[in-house]
Picture (cartoon, rainbow, N blue to C red):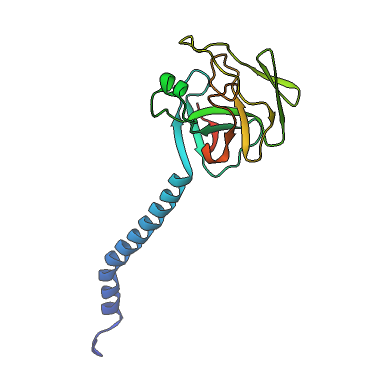
Length: 179
């Protein structure tokens, strides 16, 4: 700049550079927003429930939450021939309520399951296809595992040997009913 350039010329240069500055600020803001959205998407998901065993059809999944008694959890069911016959080779995640946590005592009498002496679920004798259903585990729930069930008579959960305890490695997260 020469000495002849006055304040008005400097102001003109600033105004000319303003769109570029705004563009770079916009790129920076967009990058931060995208990063935050990516992190959020890795820890959360909206799940759609097609099973009648839960009354909710939309469930918000929080992958980082630690399940507690009464929580709705989503999990990958363990592989079994019975599960494959009823739900296909690649079943969708299951959603059930945590009825028992590590250290709780599960007992069964006449196909009724109890958690610490309180009745929580009744097991059916046969599947909807007429196959016999083996009873799920009883005893003290191991560390990192859960006894899950629903109030629905056809719920496929820890009442049955094909599902059993649901342990941390299978848990996708805690669900919050949306609709």
